[in-house]
Image (tube, rainbow, N blue to C red; front, side):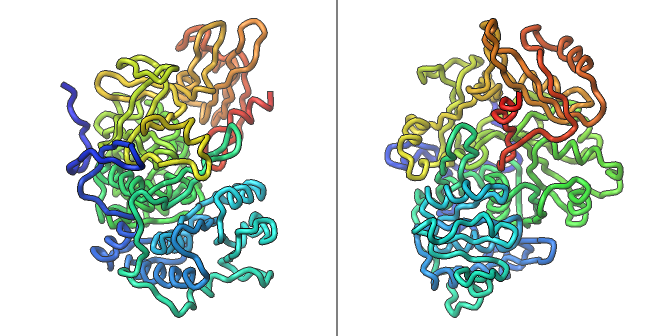
Length: 536
C-alpha cells in the first residue's frame, strides 16, 4: 500500500465534480468560489495584517482593499466590465497587484504580459485576446500598439504622465467618484476565465491559456496545503508577477492564506539576501540557479535568514551538491521541488520536503486534486515505470486556449492536458521528468534524454547552467551537443572526462559551447534551445 505524501498541512475533503462540460475532476469541497472571494477573505479576516511590501510602500490588507476598490471604480467608469480583457504590462510593483485584484472585482480578465516582450509580441497578444485596455508604466510605453493599430483597444493607462493626450493617467482612476465595496463585486462563475497567460511560444505563435477562478483557487490551496502556509508567512517575489509562478504560487497563494507579499524588481543575489533578511522572509519560489547564486555570495553568512522555512523551486533539477550546500547554509529550510506549467495554473506535483534529499531525480508526487498518467504514442496509459508522455488532469488545468479551438482540441483528451513532457511515474507515485518530446535526441537509434545529461553536467562544481540539444548528422541522425555556462574555469576536456565517467558512451556530448555568460532564456525563464540550435 502506498502511503499518502507527508504534506505540511492537513488535506481537506475532496469530492468528484463535473466541470467544463464533461470533464470529471476531483475538487476540494470547501473552497473560495472566485479570485475576488479569495482576496475578500484576506481583507475580512486579516485586514490589519501586512499584505504587500515594495521598495517604497507598505499596505495592510485593508489599505490594499481601499486602493483596489477605488481603481475598480475608476475602471468601471471608463467602461471596463465583466469579461473584458485588460493587459497588465508592468514590473513587480504595487500597481500591478492593485490592478489585478481590481479587475477580479469587476469580473474582467487580466492578461499579464512580460516587459521583456517586443512590440510585435505585445501587439499580437492585444489582437489575439481582443484586449480593450492596457495598463503600463513608462519603461514599457514603446511596447504598446497605437489605438489605430488595434481597433478594439480603446484605453491606454500609464502609471506616469504620458505626453500623448490619448493616454489616461493612473491618477485619474484614483480620482473617480465611484467606489465599489466588497459586496458590489460582479458575480462570476467558477468556470469563468479570470486570467489569460500566454505560453512561451517556442514552436510558433504563443497560445493564451485560460486560467479559471476554479483553477486559481485550487492551485493556491495546493500550495498552502503542501507547504503548510499560513498568515504568518512572508513570501519574497523574485520572479515576474507576469509569470504563473509569481502570480499564482506567490501573490494569489499569499492572499489565500492572508500572508505577506514582498516585491523586488528583479533578482540579484546581492540585493535579494539583505531584503529577505530584513523582511524576515519565510517562503519563496525560485529556479535552482537563483539558489546557486545566493550560495556564491561572499557575505552569505552576514544575512540572517533563520526565518526562511520553505524554499520551493522548479524549472530545472537541483543537484545533490546544491541541496547539501543549502542544508549547510540554512539547516531549517525545507526544499520542495514543484512541477507544473501555465496550463496547469502552476503545480501538478510537489515534493514532500522529507523526500527532497533521497529523491533528487524526481519532481515529487501529484498534488491532492491532480491526476497524472503516462501514455504511449497512441494515448494509451502505460504501466508504472514505463517512459511516455505525461498527461495531467484536475480542476487547476486550464479550460482552453483563448480563441484557438484547434490548439485546444490537440492539447486535451478526456480532461487531460498533454504536457509534451517525457517521463515516468514509479510504483510509489514519484514523477520523473526526462525531457520535452521535441528535445529527445535520437543518436544511432538510441534515445538520449537531455535532462539526464544536463543533470550530470550540473553536478560539476564549475558548471552554473547546462543545456543539451541534438544537431543533425547524416550518419547517426543526431549527435549530442552541450551548451554550458561556467562559474569557474573548466576546459572542454575536463567536462568531457566528467561525462564519460558517468554516462553511457552514446550520451556523452560530442560538441561543446562553453561560455561564461548566462544561457539564453525566454520571457518565462525557459532555456531557448531553438535559439541555441540556430547559433550552430
